[in-house]
Amino acid sequence: MMSTADEYRKKVAEFEDRALGEKSPTSRVEWIKMATSYRKLAELADRNAKTDVVPIAVVIQRQQYQAQVQKQQQPAATWNAKLLRSPTAKCRCGRSSCRLCSA
Image 1 (cartoon, rainbow, N blue to C red):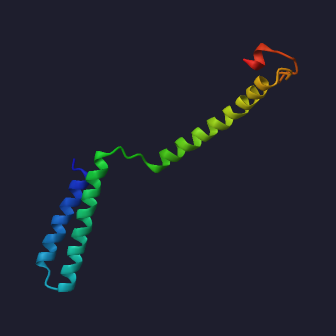
Image 2 (tube, rainbow, N blue to C red):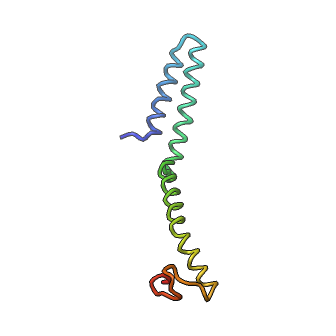
Image 3 (cartoon, rainbow, N blue to C red):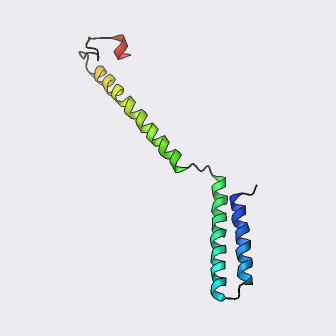
């Protein structure tokens, strides 16, 4: 199976051949522009293959999950901080000290 970069390079060769066979100067220029664009795509594909590219949807899902986890942890952390600051504070259950609520 050919890599994406190799497929782009194959197109570059095809477009260059068509440019050489074209009689119209305008069409020849267009084929050369296409070949140049595909050459750039091949270079980008090579660069991307060397790096760990993660789809943007995965990145967004991770960020949303992390934000959700932080929201869930925040109320408990705030409550525990209030308990630690005030020696007379009561637990969530209303008792002055409780191993279940303050653990």
